[in-house]
Amino acid sequence: MTTGSVPLHPFDALDDPGAKGLELADGRPIFLVRRGDAVHAYLNRCPHARQRLDSWPDRFLTMAEDHILCGAHAALFRIEDGFCLSGPCAGKSLTSVPVEVSEGWVRLRE
Image (cartoon, rainbow, N blue to C red; front, side, top):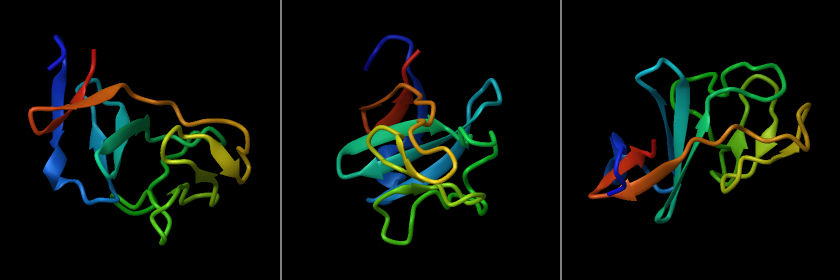
């Protein structure tokens, strides 16, 4: 475990693949995305209009669960780095949040 890490969510409670919206202690909305043993975290804001990505709670992925989807404008983002492949923000990226998996938890690295 990294010094200064904060537990966010149990790793095994994340579907594979799957996503979960959370709020940090400072009020920032984020979401976690799991694929296999990897977990990525991003601010829950589209770089296009700064709106939340999830139109419904915890609905961040496409039906095929292979990309992140903005529910407002249908922009598609890569899971592994948040890069926008298509939509009004093509070429931009989601803001990543540093996380790690340790002791069965997804933890915020501070």
